[in-house]
Length: 246
Length: 278
Image (cartoon, rainbow over the protein chains, first blue to last red):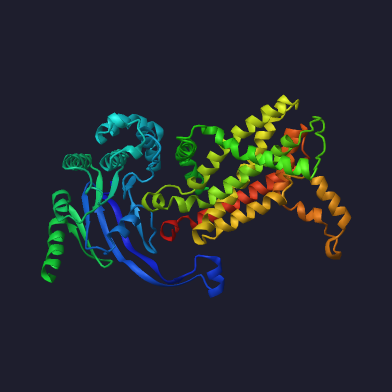
C-alpha cells in the first residue's frame, strides 16, 4: 500500500505575460503577429509528497503561487514541466457554488452541481438528504437559488462539494465564509474526513486555521518551495520570515 | 479512444447541463416553450409575404405528396436552418460564457458546447413536431417517414456539433469569431435553398454556362454548400414524402462524420489550455 496521496515532482509552471496581445484578427494582421510575451515562472521546480490521511496546508504570502499550485493539483492548469500524480479520487473546491444556475431551485442545482463535481445521479440521490441537512436550507430547497442569501448560497455549495466524498480533497480559502456555527460544522467535517483516512490539502492565510487543522505543511515563496514537512516547524519558519522583515 | 471514454463518462453531466439550458431558458416567461416557435413563425410570415406574394417564387408541387403550400415548403428548410444557425452561434460562445466555471472546476470541457447542441435539439424537436402536425393536416402522408427524418436530424446535429466545437475554440483565441459568424450565418441563409428551390439555381446556371470560360458552373459551386444537401433531404422526406437520392444521404453523412472528427481533434488539442487562455 502506498502511503503517498499526492506526489508533486519537479513541477514548474509558467504564464505568458503579454506585452502585446492581439485578440482580434484586425490587430493580429496589422501587427503581423498574435502576441509578444515573456514567460513568468509562477512555480519553480517544486517537489514534495503529501502523505495519505494528512491534512496538508499550503502557506505563503500573496502571489507566492499557492493558488497556481492548487489549480495544478485540481487539473485546471497543467504544469509545463514535472508531474503531479495522485493516488485516489481527487475533488477540488476552489470556489463554492460555481455553476449554480440562478433561476433553478436549490434541488435542481444540487443535481447539476453534483454532476459537475463528478457525482453520479445515484450518488447524489443517496446523499441528497445529508447535503440538504448540512447546508441548513431545507425550507428553501425548492426556491430558485437567486433568492438565497449569500450565506445560504455558500453553505449549499459547500455541502455539495464536501459530499463528493473524494480520497483527496483540495480546498482554497473557502472556509472564510459562513457564520461561526457553520465554520465549526465545516471543521468538524474535515476532522471526520481525516478520521476516515482521507487527505485534505488546503490553502489558507489564517495561520490559526493552519495550526489548528494541519499536521503537514509546505511554505511557498515567490514560486519556490522554501520548506515542507511537519506543520509546526514550517509554520514557525514562515511566521519568522515576516516578523523579522517587519 | 481514451478521450472518447472520458467523454462518455461525463454523459450524465451532459444531460444535466442540457436540462439546465432547457429549463432555465424560458423560465418566468408567460408563453414558455411556445417562444421557441415565435422566431421561425415570424420568419415564415414575412418570407411568405415577400417571396411567395411579391417575388412570386413557386416551388415545385410536392411529389408524390401533392402539397402546394409555400409556407410549409419554406418551413421544411427553415427549421433545419434555424437549428443549425442557433447551434453555431450559441456553441461558439459556450466556452467564453462559462469561463468562471472552467477556471474553478475540472470536468470534461466538451460537455459545454455539446450541452447546447442538446438543448437546441430539444427545441428543434418541438418545432418539427408542430410542423409534422401542420403537414398532416394539409394532407401530407408524413408519418411513415418520421424515422428517416430523425436520422437526418441526427446527421445535421452531428455536423453542427462538430462545427460548433471548432468555433468555440476559435472564439477563445479570437473574439471576432462570433461577429464573423453572425455575418456568415446571415449570408448563409440566402446561399442555401431555403426561400428558393434548387431548380431555380439550375435554371440560372444553365443560362450562364461555364463561369469565366471554365467548365465550372454556378450550380456545381452552389452544391458545395453542405446545407444544400441537408435541406434537400429534409424537403424530400417532409414535403415530398419520398426517398431522397442515396447520394444526398452519403454527402450528408460524409460532412457530419468528417466535421465532427475534426471538431473533436481540434477541441482535444486545445482543451488543456482553456483555463489559462480565457
